Length: 108
Image (tube, rainbow, N blue to C red):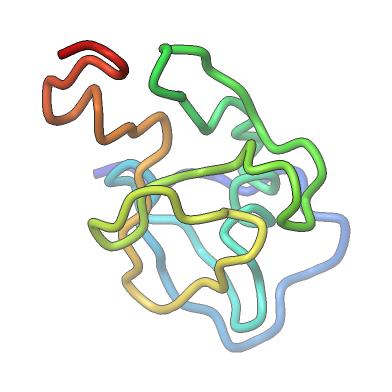
């Protein structure tokens, strides 16, 4: 399995680092970082797909706009900008419970 590469960090990572898994790819993260900061450091901009299949990325980066919903440790609709990374965390971008479960939003 290939590791995702962080190419957009603006400061070096702290010495205490660990791996998180973004779309099943290991990537280095450090304590205190948000999932969004890890995604941005890896130059991953298209992270969210809503129930109408519209793909977007983070907008406000402070928890107000809900444009960075991702799946974290099997839980849908977690805000990447507000979720702190943890060792071995499983993050899925472009994940949507309607798509994953074969549901049609708003249709009976």
